[in-house]
Amino acid sequence: MFTLVVEERIAVDCGLDRSTPNYIAPECYEPDYKVSRKADVYAFGVILLEVLCERPSWKRLVQLALPYVMRGELEMFTPEYVESNISPECVRACENLIRDCLENDADKRPMIDEVVDRLQVAIKLQNQSANDPQTVGTELALTIPEGFHDRVVLYHTSNGVIVKTQDVCQEVRKILDGYGKRVDERDLYLDSSYKKQLKAIFGSGSYTLPQLFISGKYIGGADEIRKIHWSGALRKKLDRLPKRDYPSSCRTCMNTRFASLSMCPDCCYWKRDQANMA
Image (cartoon, rainbow, N blue to C red; front, side):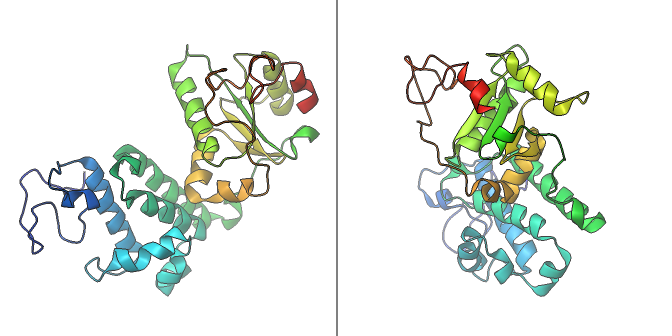
């Protein structure tokens, strides 16, 4: 993609034949290193850091700026031009992308397709801010049940008939799981009454799965969830909500969170209990 990692290796001053100087991923220093796109992702993270900081990488950019990135304080290392012309939401999305691209562990870096998607989200955030600053981070006004005010509610499906929908739902569940918060998961495939709940919320409007609500506010579907996750806004929304008190991975219910309480006392609950939680 970026052609910074090449099959025909070029010798550099450090005595290695791994990649372009100053863009070399940590794994490239290993004696048994093999060319991979994850090294390209690391190199792109350096490029994005150069763009935001307006500093060349050869001036120890990664070593100097990375601590700011890890603390979510990249603005303290960027010139005034960036602060004046790029929205905080866009900077935060880029900052999170840089942090993930510069992971020492290549397996933890995003795939190139995800990098492209996240860049598009950052661009949208910037465009929204330029056109109408009030539109960034706003939520739709819907009639939300009162019981939603103190929790995270996720409507999703485990139905594998529509593979794409199931995959997206699992992706969102994984995102939320990473924050370690308790999530009230409502699987429409396991309980049709959840469809009635969504019907009452959206009325005559249409919706797709998944759908997320946090602290009594409507967040949106998969695209909106990815956007606030990558921009860092999701962490703030979840900050004061209760931590997960059940295991992240459960072999008893296979992570459906929906089984007899006697079968799975750690993380599941009865269907009839859902009426009390709504």
